[in-house]
Length: 475
Image (cartoon, rainbow, N blue to C red; front, side):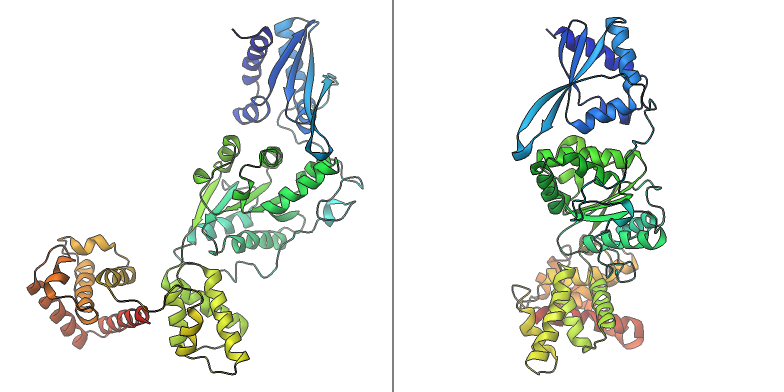
């Protein structure tokens, strides 16, 4: 059987739900717990001092009317608040409902006084909004970001956000992908673009680790309100690697309230993560649901062409030149991370400079050994199929079907031709890898490729490019 205070509060919630929007109800009323009803005084427990202040600031009249409707004109409301103390301890403090007639518009902004009393967690003890350092690195911008199929959505969404921060459906914008694919670059590029286009907006980039450490320091110094108020000043908040909030319940709670305040006031939030929000573990469901409000854009591993473009951009930016075969070798062998790709080039330049050697393919082979497990592998039919299909942008499984589409047929014939030249497999075995075709089909395919190479210049160039990629895979 529910207690009387639970019944009363449930009835109050029904009234409140009809008077606020769903987002406000979920954010500000669902976390409240009724704890006592005595002498017509209903006591409710709220998660923090900030939460209490927000209710008193925005919903005081609605709360008062709801309570009085259920308990009569003499009814009163009191709050029980969990207060954080130094050393991470908690204590319970009771506050009355002052019914002070403050701002009663549930959709209005929470007023923040900016003076010399708010402690800036980024070192400066007394700040004004204009003095907040963005913590951005100016080298990360859209001009230096190489776009490809692997990151086109994230780049387009990021640029849209930068042109209209807080004014698009991409709020929050969550950029996710594996390590070294450019998430931090994109997040900071958004911030730098906004700073340039909207100099009056306050932009802040912070890693989740730094945010957590700042919160811990605020707890120790009993400055949690200053910490919250500081982050409420931000117009564009960029938080890197949100997966590190996992299992940090109190940090998640404080970030939840900061997120709500910024989002409800039309401020832009950009988050990066090593996985999609739906795959994040150790985070509260209420926080995950908010991450899904906007757009989640993934960054995938760059294809060969994009890796070549990235190396070309870095060479141009740094004013260096490398032999084409060396660039192709590096791009072909380092496939998983842009960070490793650029690191390999830096190592190559350093080794050549320190040892006074020319940069050639032999030196590149030695350097790449530090970045990949092996630089020598046997060419397989599967590798050839993948190389050809990547080149023509067709699925590998299509090579095994009976379709007569020209692009698929050409990719299949080329794959058979390369398999015959670069593997030791018999024609019969090669045919089995292409949907069980017989050896005569393989012979016909190889002859067709040779004939086309004699008369079609573009086709011949395609074959030469594929042969180059197969050769690189053997190195």
